[in-house]
Length: 297
Ligand code: SF4
Image 1 (cartoon, rainbow, N blue to C red):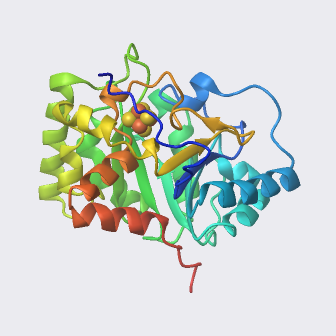
Image 2: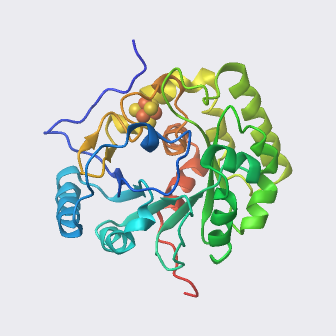
């Protein structure tokens, strides 16, 4: 049986509680490992009023409680984003920090930083690291987290994570591995994945608090866990993804080319670990979507 996730959802079974929304097609980055760069849909973004009405309709239709806002770069549509987040009880914004990040978004914030300057710029383009760090340093320390996506070209980021977290003022870093098509050379597979997981465990032991990934969640990144991850993927029924036109992306936010057999999407893996009884992974999920206190509140 193929490990690719199959839909449990149907018109009569709308049970999604978490949704991922691509707020816009626009982005200032051209990240080599990004699903959006590979498969961004053509066309113009929806008008603000159309988008808000559509989001409210989808919330009712699918029973969505929490929203992950992605893109493109969601902060390029800041006014829309602020209004849209009021529709949902939990919100998490993923940003490249290529634009300023307001300190008062009132939601969880994950900032994508893929390692120290040379590794980050190697995936995202020259100057991306300096620009992102300039915006990150203006945030109140501890009110946001970093998100690092490991690729076959950037595994040396692992040992640099403690310094990166300290320099940025983040409350920690959520680590994942690149997800993409089966022939994607940036994916970390097989023995290399196992060794990378071992290295992450060592960082977690030596630098408590740096990794937001609980130990049980890290185990979900091992190749031996891949089939179980794909078969329990929350996009089978408790999560749904939408493109910038608010059309369902099948089967998940990565689109239909992604290889489920090597999936390491952090929220999917954290859900897998939480479903196996790991309380730390459940706490992680709850905390990511909790409302972020406004600056000074
Ligand atoms: S999140 Fe991962 S396992 Fe789930 S459908 Fe997407 S690629 Fe497959």
